[in-house]
Length: 410
Image (cartoon, rainbow, N blue to C red):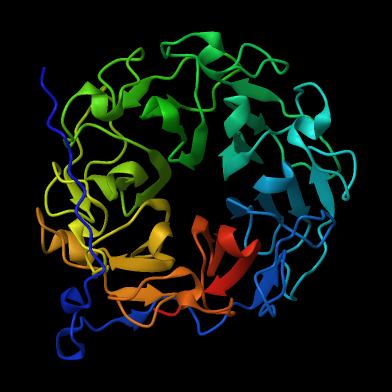
């Protein structure tokens, strides 16, 4: 099969910028400012590096999730190779964390705590989600560079509580990509960056294998998944399933959400959001029904081949979350958050409307980390993680080394 080469055409030509008269209007997606900022100052004098770990700092956090409306809150402090936990929802800036998992103390860092891989060590932790099963609340972590997902049956409430289950590896002491093989398999992973619990299903974005793995119910250690999306079988790991981009294939899946019964996956490498209208598929390689961010499911250029973004274009969207009627998208490389309303899908299928809501930029046609300025309370620099719980939105603002907590404005 011949694969058509994708040509990326971008230009900063000012003549291609949208004029003010033709700008698409928007409504604010989030409040004017977050109600709490963790990991770094709300408005530092310069970008905070956060290289010294303690109970109040983060370094490139890529995931955050509230386990209930009032807490606990758990954060993947990715650059420090640890998980930070707050017993209650913080309401003040730079509230110190209560617990740490992955390091021997709050002032330590290093992959796997500079020790052997274990049930409480992490190496580039990225995705995080809450689990509801058998009347208990637990959590799952995408431990990306240990090529595994760790599962706690109940929420940890102390330092270095070991996980109860592991997926992607045969045991808690192994950490090789695809278990040391060149091919993928149904029980291996390579850089899993996203994890989500939806309708009693566990879904994992097995990113470097270019696929999403799905388990019906909470799996035991070593249990193979029931379904794979993005590939036709469990052994192929080629970009876009070894063919041209399509409604079935993926290049860099990351975020997963269920939006009013629709399964949504952020395919960051193809600069799009994939949507399955009938919920979680049960057939391997099931194609999605529509995409956001591209005009068709065969086009993949970032910002639809333009330098300047639009209300209907995306540039490496890593994270998504659903909140009421809204799908919130972290348009990561454009350093902004976008919001689509469910009516934008139902009334415009198969070609959805542009996004309605925006935060992080002044309008839909601007881009730039922190709007090309010093960090502000309402700006973003590569927002990488996004989770909603109740009326709170947690944003892992990775490039600003912080997690910000917001209220939805729409």
